[in-house]
Amino acid sequence: MRHGKKFNHLGRKAAHRKSMLANMACSLIKHKRIKTTLAKGKALRIYIEPLITKSKNDTTHSRRVVFSYLKQKEAVTELFGDISSKVSERNGGYTRILKLGNRLGDNASMCYIELVDYNTEYVTDKPQKKSRRSRRKSSTSNKVESSVPNTNEAPIAEEVVEETPVAEEEVKEAPIAEVEETSVAEEVVEETPAVEEEVKEAPIAEEVVEETFVAEEVVEETPAVEEVVEEAPAAKEVVEDEQAEANEDKKQD
Image (cartoon, rainbow, N blue to C red; front, side):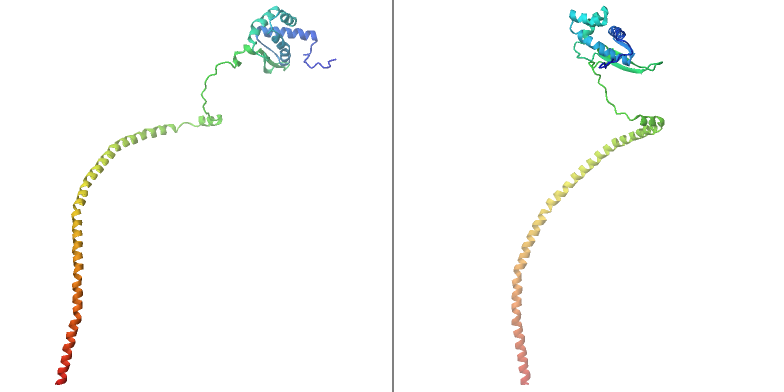
């Protein structure tokens, strides 16, 4: 009965299964990569990884224990020599399984099983190349752009050619600006005599001040007018006297 036997029996008896796994382990140690079915590859990983761990301790006892499994002196020598030095810093996980397609005939799933430290394509200690990241549009947009003919590129080039005379016109306009600035400076120079005229107008202001004194004298003469106004009542009295005399003469007549 198979109570408690969870490993894959691979459709073989114990002796046949052990011999097959020993031969596959020797082939893996020799070639560093072999191709087999996925079920056999998983069974081989469970079989060989404890032996690789045992090879890190290079003693006679360890060699005899490994030889009892592999049954090949050359494989034991290779395992305790080159492979043990390669995997000395790795704590387990010495093998890698790469799945392949299904096999023709029985449609069995196939795989590669290899030693990790001997595959240079998957080594992470390589110096990483500095790659420039470029934003690329989606493949659909690229297809659309490729399908549309590039007819608009030629007019753009013509527009660029047409824009160059504008720069020349700007260069030509620069001397004009300088000439205008010089004329403005000349106008400023011409305006300076106006300041001198203002200075000359200052004596006129003094004459205005003198006229103010004349006006004060006129104000002072106003009392004479008041005196003439005061003499007006005396004239009225003379007129009244004359009328009174004329009335008396009429009465006497």
